[in-house]
Amino acid sequence: MTFSIVFTVLATFLAAFCLFSVTVFVHELGHFLAARWRGLVVEEFAIGMGKKVWGFPWRGVEYTLRLLPFGGFVKLPQMVAMEAVEGKSDQDIKDLPPVSPLSKIITAFAGPLFSFLLAVAFAFLSYAVGVPQNQGLLTQTVGFVEPGSPAAEAGLMPGDVIKRIDGQLVSRWQGRYDGVVESLMLSKNERIKIEVERGSQSLVFSILPVPNPALENLRMIGIEDYPSRPAIVGQVHKGSPAEKAGIHKGDTVVSLNGQTVSSPGLVGYLVGKSEGPVTLSVQRGGDILAFTMTPVMEKTSQRRLLGIGWNLVDRKVVSVPPSEQILNGVFTIKRTIEALFSPKSGVGIRHLSGPVGIFDNLMNLLTVDWRLVLYFSVVLNVNLAIMNLLPIPVLDGGHIVLSLAEWIRRKPAETRIVEVMHMASLGIILCFFLYVTFFDINRSARRVMNFFENSKESKEPAALQFEPSKP
Image 1 (cartoon, rainbow, N blue to C red):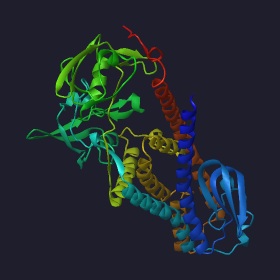
Image 2: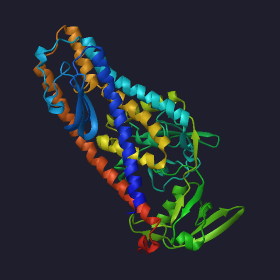
Image 3: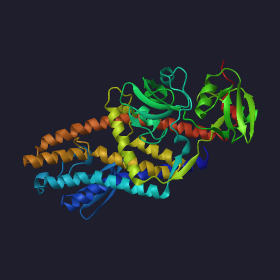
Image 4: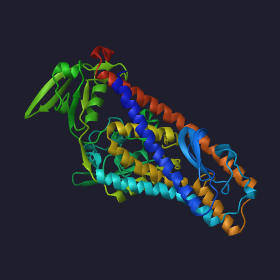
């Protein structure tokens, strides 16, 4: 591993860590400022969880960093005692002055409010610097339908323009809550209703999706990887069949073995299904040239490949209005929650991301373009605001519900009962985090392996990457 790769990984890790820490800090800052404003006793402002590794006292508050760099808390003994997480309080809650339910509600609500305000700030910053938008994913036109797939059996065809999925308008292929791919994955119905335009006709298909093992059994219908777009060669790997045959960067593949190519994904599909040599017809300038080559088996993925990397970086920096970014975050979360709780969807808890998954996503986006991180941070902070408002003990929404009950009853709930509720909820949430973290780590490990494999490909001889196709 070269120094440049090590430096890239470390720098990206540090940048992602700082961004994640800002998200946690601002949320907890909301609780802290509201608590000080309403006169609550604040014992500690902590970033991270677990054992304390560093800290200092200032004006009666201890500011600390904890061992595990995920999450944080503000220790407020008058709200609820959480010794298992925050450590034993220095004061007996019975000796502290009572706090009004309104002050508790304001303090609890301030965290999600600050997360939402941070999302707004990121949205305006993202609007100012722009968002790299993949123009090839703005289409709604199907480029290819896998033979034998649910879409093919239902009658969907290349060239169909998808207008609605389950009655909801779609605006592009991928990249928003109303994208084709997102709408298919987050469908909460057993059969997916797809409305398309085919020439002058308007057609409706009812399609029963199937689990996709490559995507942890999220449901698919056989069009997800094939938006209609030119198959432009962006890279030709050294020593590959494509290089030996004479394929050049910038060539546009127009057909493979006589079949018209209307999507880069179609080339990979046809090569994987082929036996023996394949013939590519490419457009180079004003000429159409034909090249015949024999695919080889790539060692890592065990797929038949030509050694072509597609030019999918047809990005254009656009300014997305802040309101659109916020709404995208809200509706993405809404559709995800609806699919999660629908017994007919393919979305499960394992498909959600915890701190490890979020951190990994930040690192991945940073390697592509730092402006994508700002755009993602809008969704992240909207998600943090909404999820913390769920009426679950331990979360801010749970504190608000208990405080409202106290306000109505005109007396607080029994301390022991509240502690049991919070500890039980904490146990459930910790189990949830451990569960999703297991899948997050698996995804991160695969991403890291792919990163180093891709780094090797650009430097190692082709003989280390390819082997003859297996019969």
